[in-house]
Image (cartoon, rainbow, N blue to C red; front, side, top):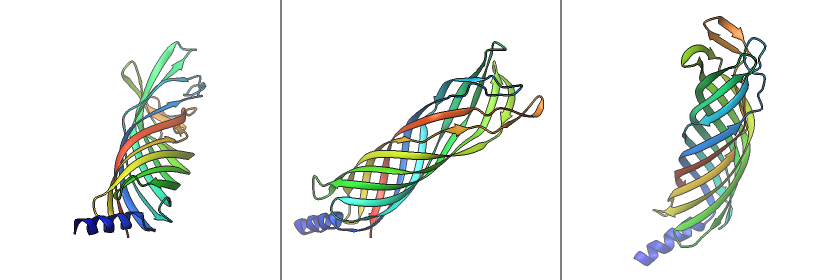
Length: 225
């Protein structure tokens, strides 16, 4: 009986078919900036000291397993975390601080290759490309801890590329739990072009955060049918 169940589970894990899954993750991020003329009153703000907080993510995926090794799937990922940076104004010998939330909503087309070390365990390598909608929201500007302004939200569309590796274990013939690791290039973020504060609503040169990379660890639940 046990042997028959194991054979049934192995056959199901390896056979072609459709699958869907739910993904969760936590991770880190880093980025740079080429902004040297941000801010109001003629700009001049140089972005420095960019810091990302811990990111959290949730997503879904759906695809088709073509044979024992090759799969293709679409995925949606929602990733969010805190962000903080300084803007140095050399002409005024002052530095202001900005803090807010960086959110990405990404859609990717992916391919996967599976190795089968046992009847119920799969090692998977993935690669995907797509588009991500990167939003800076709730950005507040402060000078020496004192409120200066709230900066307009903005969403920037960027390309995304991602590679990953995972281990999946089939707990039933159709359902697998996975441990996943991914690294992704998620493009850039940009603030809006206005701010609201002590001087009312004024225009600014936007601040940009470029070349953002993320690394994440997560768990997944996948079902075949």
